[in-house]
Length: 186
Image (cartoon, rainbow, N blue to C red; front, side, top):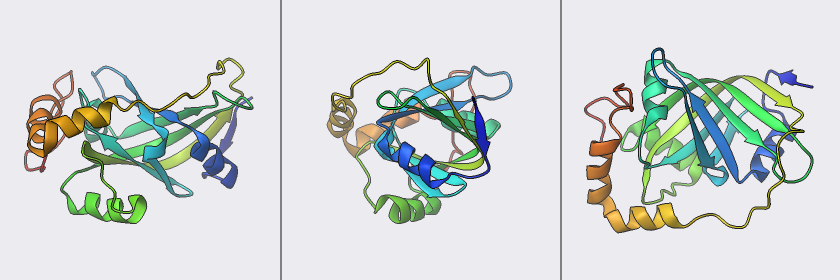
């Protein structure tokens, strides 16, 4: 049975901290709905109503485009090991692009200034609803290891190659929505 909470409680924070993966869902009017898997270790709980994750360069940038157009976002965490549980964080998201003062400040405060080669933005969610549900239908999986592919790819591209890639692949959504302002430092 679903339960709703006004804030991220200690039990939610602890559950989030154990997850190896979470899913980010966004949508914008007239655009496709996007759901993307994210590395659990990239997320930080900033407070009772705020989380952020350090986002890596990817093949698209639907999240940034949708948040710019609409702002709505849901993060979902599923227990694939141990007791069944699904936890969703609902709210309004914003993107802090790499190279901006807001990005630098949150990188320093929440991520210890550690920036992997492929980092492109920090996504912050102001949470207005926390909901848990049973998770009885979620299968059990064993975490074997994180894949090294994304880090290897980013390191092989190097800083200049990543900038060129983001300019080509990350400035617009698949539906043509802009992801960043033109002056964003890629």
